[in-house]
Length: 335
Length: 254
Image 1 (cartoon, each protein chain N blue to C red):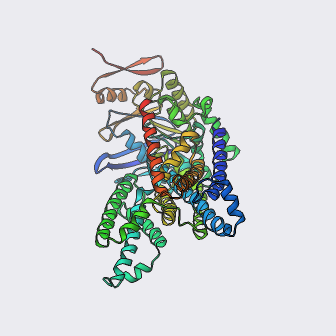
Image 2: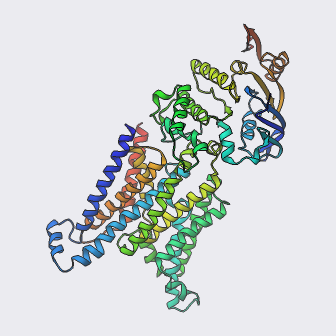
Image 3: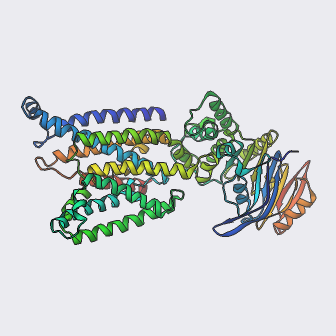
């Protein structure tokens, strides 16, 4: 029965991914219009609009969601907490600060205020966000003195989050020109995803997902408690560090390409566990697929809900995520 | 008789507070029950013997070799450890939990073979949890969960079994079943268990009595000196009485 549900969920997620990818090709500035889509395909702009804009954007949204779903499942397994989020270890605040630094440097360079600002302004936002996300996690690891103690790691993540956000705020005050760019980054967007992004995201997923699955029995053993896991001969400090690095890489890559997309990393593993709970090897895979489906669905909705205007995808995921958590809360209260 | 696990002058502190003060024990083949009042250091001793706690002083030997000289995986194949209940939670099924007991043999990247599955089946049969092997850990009652976790420890097939309160949450028939199981396992290896239930502890081959981080008495279950020490440590609130060839501890009421 359990195996059957797990297989069925994977099949449903695969089918939903296919349908949504197709929907991502169709959905455009005029909303849902099959006739408009077929007309577009026959026109001269098909290669550009479908091939260079909609296709990479849809695939990129799925891949970003998959990385966030994987990171969420890793975080929830590592911290043995179903409310753990991929951004817990300072990656979000680190990426956000790096983006603000680059944006502020651009503004300051134009005013010739700081000599280093010129160099910083030439650093791409994508690279800055990735380095910032990894830097945030690294800082958390340093403050927690490694990944040995879960509680210390969580507390360090909170401290890093608060401090780096405060520094971002301070920098934004000094260079108000960075505010708009920062806001766009914080809201999350799939609008800038191209084939280059897809290649990066796909490579990241191809590297992190199988590695995490290979190490998934560590997360299974942690279900029994720290001591029991260690009594099984697992080198927990080292394994946990590798898992944190995978979590940081998956989150950093997703954040660098699409900004801070809220709730996908939290909700995807939740949905998987509600419908077909299982060992972590399966949960990681299914959470990645569920994350992909969630973000791609949100992206298609963001493009079509108020077409020809477009909603920031992060706003939609935050609203859907908030409603989902409220439903969860109500269900728990009822039971 | 060869000693499977030996500790000498073992001192352990938890959060800076000394808990074990120079404890020396020899765990020989057979079943040793560790008893004592709350806070005596029983669970800490068991964790230290399993190599799960840093020692402040003293040494532990496993099969004649210092515990630290064994690799983590070699040690895990030789010592199976059952934690006090309350830590395990999650979505794994009973079978998936018991399969974790084979990790020390398979390694993190190894796949379970037919031999592993046989051991898993045997461990589940021994603790009578094979009938609900596809239920999830969080769907089990306290007693069912305890039997599942005990099966996980048994699936390791280690020559030394260290069990922290293995009969907690079990109803009387399953307590008796676990005692019989431990007696059977003790014929093939070394079993040490922390127990709060004195009547069950007196079914063991040997009893180790602890108080305030020290071993205050150790002896066979029928040792009169041990019985006297038990009465003294538990403030004469228990009576040890003989029934047939066994001894039982009864609360002294009125």
